[in-house]
Length: 258
Ligand SMILES: Nc1ncnc2c1ncn2[C@@H]1O[C@H](COP(=O)(O)OP(=O)(O)OP(=O)(O)O)[C@@H](O)[C@H]1O
Image (cartoon, rainbow, N blue to C red; front, side, top):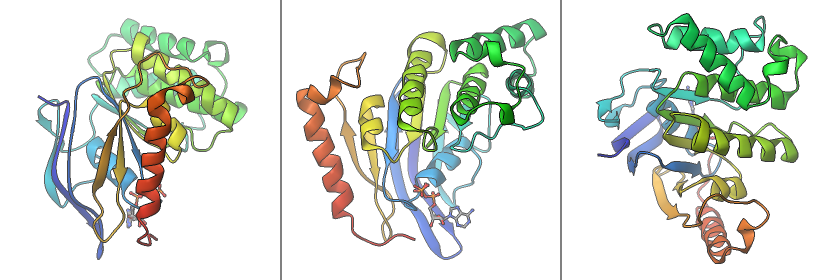
């Protein structure tokens, strides 16, 4: 059974068809990145899997269960940190865990909050409010908050898009470390605009196509062994080939998007 099974998914906004007949299977433990031109429906797809948007037609099964709304087994991280500005970082994470995991004891909640804030290096800054820390720190807190809920599936919508290159590189490493070693999270879906990021992180890259047929255009395997090092990955024989293929797919999809 696939961890995520998407069948014949359709979604329109007013008269605009944003997803048309999306079919995709994602295995448990896979890291899948999504790329495509701006406006081609990547976020919409992620939001439907996250249960924040309802599809017009088709189904999404996550670990065999049909998605009908948000749930703690699917945590999301967005480009804008979406932390509550009046709460400290630790309270942001704690409140999210408490509301998602009502059956957890206070000790378990506190253990998760401390473990993930520590893992992203923010425990010493836990009492600061989002407005008192850098964008990179705020996004680390958002990532810690998502992992602290212990979701089986993590949905990331351009989580590092607003960060400078160095901060982004550090967060990519922390994300992989959390996913591989620290957490119960198995499957990750991540929307990105960066081809390098898409290849570095993914087991497979999903290329979305533009209207008039907005759907999955191609799925490209990334058979590069982990752990991957950002400076040496470019020397792997498959890297240039994958990069060229992705560029070609994007360049050849010339239909205009809003
Ligand atoms: N709630 C909404 N109401 C109306 N139109 C919407 C809504 N959400 C998205 N759209 C439209 O649907 C299309 C796809 O949007 P979506 O955000 O999924 O694209 P995207 O591929 O994630 O884009 P980007 O890479 O720029 O973030 C866009 O034309 C967008 O304007």
